[in-house]
Length: 215
Ligand code: SAH
Image (cartoon, rainbow, N blue to C red; front, side):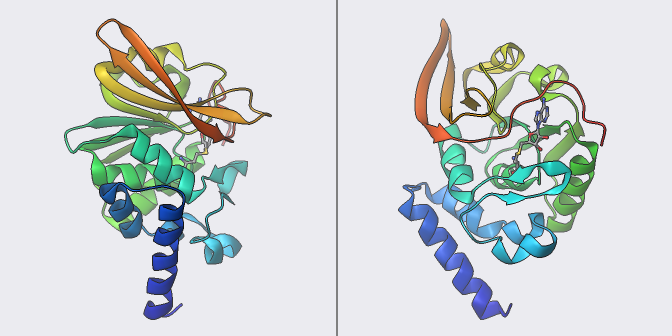
C-alpha cells in the first residue's frame, strides 16, 4: 500500500466512525493514530480498515472499529485515569485507551495473545500499557480501584469483583447477556450510594470465560 492509499483508507475509516455517531474528537484522534493493521495478521491484514470484526489467534476476534469507538466514547476516559480492560485480545482496544488514559492494565486468559499484544505495544512505543495473563472475571485486585473499566467479553451479569474494583465516581462499560444471543452494552456508574445502569446498544461479543486458557 502506498502512503497515499493508506491516507485515503484512514480518511474513509474515520468517516465511517463518524457516520456511526462517534463525535468525540479525542476518540477519533486516537483511532486515527493507532494503526489497526498492526494488530491484524496474515490474510486479514488487508481488511484492517474495514468496519468489521476480524479473526485473531486462539480463535478470538478483534472487535469492529465502530464498536471500539462507541465503547471508548462511552467510557469518558480522562488523562488522569487508571483503566482496566478485561479481554486484551489483539491489544487494539488497549492501544486506543492508552492514548486517552494515564495507565492501562489489560488482562487476557490466553497467554499467547498477551505475548503478541505486548510485542505490538513495544513496536508502537506504547509504554503506559501493562498486559497480564490472568482471569479478568476477578478483576485485578492488586491494582484496584480503577477509574474506568472496560470489559470486551460478554458476561451474564456485570461481574461482582469488577463492580467492587470500580472507584466511586468511576465508569464501567460491559456487554451483558447470554453468549449465543445478542447482548446489551451496559454503562455502569458507581455512585456514593450504589450503582447507576444505562443500556447503550445491542452488541455481540465472545463470552467471558472463567479460568486460564491452555494456550
Ligand atoms: N479487546 C480485544 C477484543 C476482545 S475479544 C481487541 O481489541 O482486540 C475478547 C477477549 O476476551 C478474548 O481474547 C478472550 O480470550 C478474552 N477473555 C474471555 N474471558 C476472559 C477472562 N475471564 N479473562 C480475561 N480475558 C478473557
